[in-house]
Image (cartoon, rainbow, N blue to C red; front, side):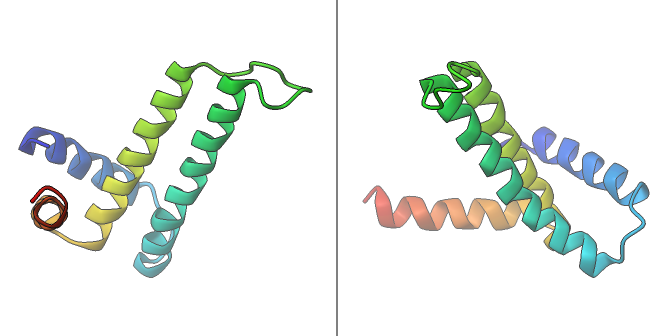
Amino acid sequence: MDRATWQTIDRLVEWLDANSTNSPDVTRLLRVLKIQEEAGEVAEAVHGAMGSNPRKGASHTWADVEKELCDVILTGMVALTTLTPDAQARFDRHLTTVAARSLT
């Protein structure tokens, strides 16, 4: 991801922080837990796209799944930025590590 993306995430974190009444410890915890909430929404959208709930039928599309996956990624980036002041470098190091062990 480019620097502009991370700058936008930084701005979102600043906005969230400015509108939070929680302590820093609680804020960190809630932002990490938010990832699970968003992942649940991905699962719900997949079930809806596949029509696996007879009561609801086809309640979602694959475009809905894509949107929810973007929310998971965005939420993870916000959580990582909340945990470390240099989230981009941390992510880049991790991506390099994963690629080295998986793509070689």
